[in-house]
Image (tube, rainbow, N blue to C red; front, top):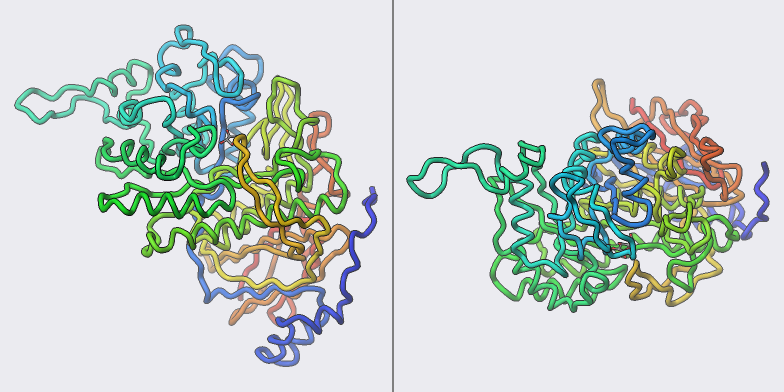
Length: 573
Ligand code: AHR
């Protein structure tokens, strides 16, 4: 099928591009005329600099988020033990298998906004005795899926749990007792007395509920969006509560990683005021990470609007441009933290991100916030993961919102129907980066004008709040590179997004002080940017082998197809 959309812009000619390209000029100076010749044949260049390491890529930037919202938990994750849908102890088997395929390292739960009115005690004990309660999203929750079911989900996947605690409606005592219930050791424990060792009461309750061994949860979100649904607090008010919640908690010999509620989008005032409040008090702030939420709306002028499936070329470029602002969000907050974070011990935790559209493509009315995902979302996924990797020194954890039946999902499920989305494929294609060393890579390509750029585009989540200035240009080619030891050398992974709708980019790829000996790859490129998977056609979008050529003089020439995401696995000589 041919792309039905006409060219959205007049791309500069190759000659004009190379004339203006500082990289091409630098190539002449640095590498001599033969290298400049190779670059001159290309539409774009990528220079990989292994001697400029950034940091180890935390596998946890590939994390996930599941909330008691619409069809995420009930139907998406939890189908129940008696269901005819294939399941493992009540958990949808396809969900577990898919999360394993993308090596999901961490799962955040139970919200989101839901977390701040959730009592963890409602979700423990015999299922038939658990209370049904009204939950945040105007939905009654039967509590059939609770703490133990969540831990079993994580264990089955091999992921770590990340629990968002209720800060708005429960006292600090419930928070530290939740930690105690999760982490207190099994069996008798010595007390500070001559009395014989006895079991910890909460550990005994956990054991009675089926799990003798501790859950070992170390990652704790202290509230969620406290500037919005989590309490409508000021940064100073939140800082005081954060201190009270974290001043003492049981540790059992292992440190807890506490994540404070951070800003909405690019709201650096929140970050500055929060850090000022936390650090004006000389007492330790107990802070490990700062949560950041940045969603890209389907519309430049309205939050959570725009159609997931129907969009113009201009809207496509504009959405990717606004998604690319994640880079500014990361660097702006990092800079705002800097005066209080000179040793860079506190990291960024981007625990909600994704493209958020308006209503129209939900699975059914009760699947609140579910939406379809197209190739456009696959490109946004690649752009976002590449940003996290380029800033591996700053971003320690990131969680896509949300893994199934929600905003920027990897999976859609309804009863016995199931499909992965194009976003899933990008997560899978990027797995070689997990735990590798991020290295600098310079990309040069003709940029794309964003005709819908505006000074103030609304940004938010459920509690919409704030705006960002939108750039008038989208990078014509972007990506990231990492290097990891293998059995017999080093594997260099290069991931690349070509957002041009109508232009394949023939690219000269060089590695500084090294020669490329071979390359293979995978590419995700639809026939049309609107392509998506459905229950009836779950393989409409899927990756194929990338057509690589043999390197010449240690360099690779590769053509990145229009509107594509590519992973190249490069072997160095
Ligand atoms: O992911 C959906 C909602 O978006 C979350 O509950 C909330 O934290 C954000 O506003």
